[in-house]
Length: 185
Image (cartoon, rainbow, N blue to C red; front, side, top):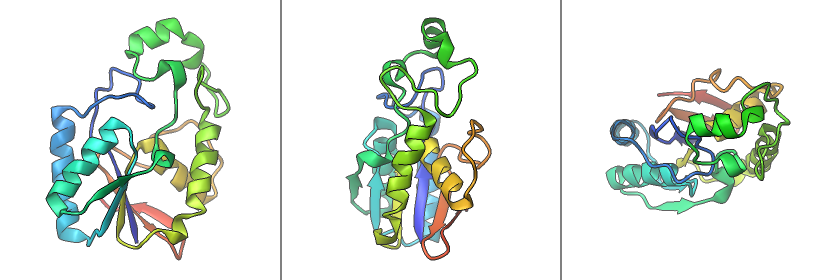
């Protein structure tokens, strides 16, 4: 099994994407609780994380609790929202209203990616997952984990980011043989 964990809560008043947002106090607590669950219910031997700050922070919390080193992979980054990354949501909506109204999977953020671009990037990663060592924990973002759900379920990409239950610090297992992913915590 491969395990995937979404980072802990960050400040939702800002656009995430490739921003340098850090975890909130609640996000740190969520990450600690999830790490304790991992320590009791899995045998993680390797941690690979997105190199975006909130995922790095989460992975270091896990690493400190289960005593496993972390490496970073840029493929595991969230969708690049370009010029909107890290902006306060109110300012982003005012400055770039077209990216918050009638957004489709092929809408590309200014100097960033579309959801379809993220899907294609994660599809490349998905095709290499057979080579990932069992008991690896991947600490990443909702968008990345959602793309794995779309891929394994052969589901058409849509804009419903809530449908797979990828909440902050949630843990999902990926069965390499069956090519299935499911939320386990």
